Image (cartoon, one colour):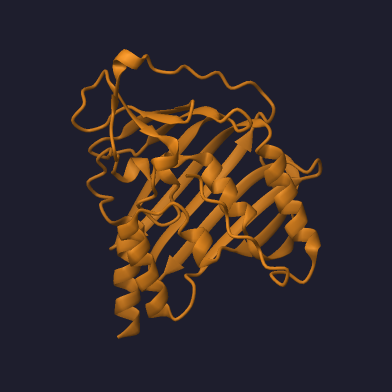
Length: 269
C-alpha cells in the first residue's frame, strides 16, 4: 500500500491543477547542521556564492518541468532581479495553457501581477511580497527568485561533484539535499499539510536534491532543485547571467492596480 499512497501524495504536491493553468514575513532558511557535510569547504563555497549574489543583480531564466498523472508540463520564468535593492521583473510562460503568460514586477515590498483572473486585462493585481505563498512543491511564492536562493543556501550534506561547462564558463558543481523545513518555507497551509503527510508516509524527508554551479570567480551561475517520487517529478533549473548589470524596473501606476489577497494557478507558484 505504501507505493500508491506515495504516488497520490506526490501527484497532489507536484501537479495539482497543472492542466487548468489559470493565473492565479520572509522566512529565514533552516541553518545547516555542522555535521551536514564532512568538510566545511563545499558548504562555505555555496553559501558565499549565494551571499554575493544577494548583494548584486543578475538576469535569470528558470526552466520548470512537472510530471504527474502521465502528463508533463513545462514552464519558463525569465527576467532580471536587483537582489540588493529587492526589485525586479519576470515573465512566466506555459505554452498551451488556458492562461499562458503572466508578467510580474517586484518593487517596494510588493508584487504586481498581470493576467489575474477577474480583474481585467489592463489592471495589475498587487500582493504584499511577504504575504505571497507557494502552492506547489519546489515552486517559489509568485516565482520570487530570492526564495530559490534561500533554499540553495540551506543545502545540507553538500559534496563537490567536479567541474562542468555551464553558461559558457567552467564551474564547480556542488550537490546536496534540502531538509523538510527548507522545502516547506513559505508554503500555503494546505500544501504544507500534504507535504507533511507525504513525509509521514515515506517515513523520512522527501528526496529533494539541490545543485549549485559556482565559477572560478566564486559566482553562482546555475541552480537546480529536483524531486522524483513514484513517477511524480519536478525539476527547477535557474541559469544566471549578466551579473552586476543594471536591472530597470517599471512599476505599474497605482491607478492601474487592484489589491488581491491571494493569487493561485500554476503560473504563479
